[in-house]
Length: 335
Image (cartoon, rainbow, N blue to C red; front, top):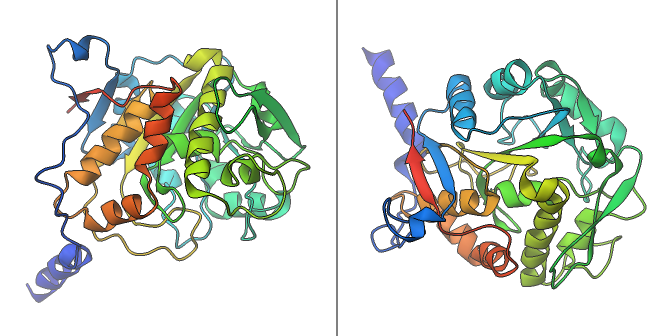
């Protein structure tokens, strides 16, 4: 009995010191009511509360998306064993068994353990990603390619790994969480920073995005709003390239909701509850739905504070402004 009581105490300890969210009661979401005029044109975001391999497959299938040809799954391999990257055991059923897909990644634009081909491949292997997919492709291992940015205010072109063009469809599989620079990280960040070429090539798409389009080498620091706007524009360019978005489907997993991203080797321990898995054909609607779930959570204070301290909502604002997706959505919960 003592052991059971001790386990219960440990399970509750993670959230015992959760920062209260004063905005939970008054926050207005972007979800539109079923049957309303707005609902007719709003993209659907599917939501399941379970976070299991079976639930991940189920919510993906709910989108009705049919991957065809060579399929890549863009997922973060995580900086260290301590970081909150999506564990291979969670994604194997979908990535390998359902899609027979290749996991794809690009090198980083900072130091760490994933800034070059050799070290990044070692981390991918050590973290178990080579065992749960039909191959692992470091897309900027052989350089970069240029894709156009249509309607951008910060960028006119985007630099991604040269292997990017080798795939017919992509699943953007993201761990939704806070982020030290972007405020939050989800589908838009994975589409932009995730696919952008790293520091190991001549032109770093990651540096360009972080610097708001001012350079492709050197420091990743720059004007905050310019960075957020560049993320939205780069993400749009990826979707535009992939058959105007028809070659893309997005899934966000809302577990281990730390204020820090998976690129942090020692992230802050989450102090709010896990929420579930969401999926959509519209990455903007998907990220907005995740943000709304954070803002309406009574224990979401820490992540809300991180988002607002980085003006993270501006990424969604700019995405909508340039015609990249919709902030309004219909939320469909599946059991």
